Image (tube, rainbow, N blue to C red; front, top):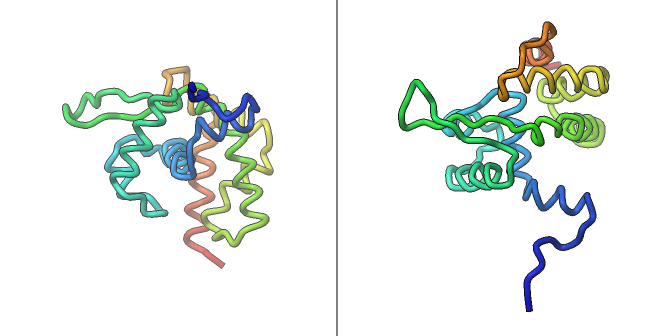
Length: 164
């Protein structure tokens, strides 16, 4: 008996199968919003404390399914740089909605939920701006005038200074 490639052809199921598990989304989040592009940065700066073996496994899996690409680092022969691919960049609206839902229905910290709230308030216009910026950073597209990432980072830094 042959094993099926997927449990079903349902698009939600296929998305879940591609993303794999919660760690995969966390890695994509950290590359997307934290611009963490090296293994060491992803490991050292993980708020959730991902283990090195899990990180290595998820990075490999995300490259295999086409959500990340892995390239050499011109500044260091033994380092790799991970970049978002177009399908990963198109996850921005999904991650924005997940963050908004979590900030409303879970006990999230103010400073870690500020980005989600701003993306929810900005809606599709902010998501499109962020995707354009990510295409510039990760795919070499022209840099847009507006930096949504800078706006999100500034709001995070302000919230972290004054964590009511």
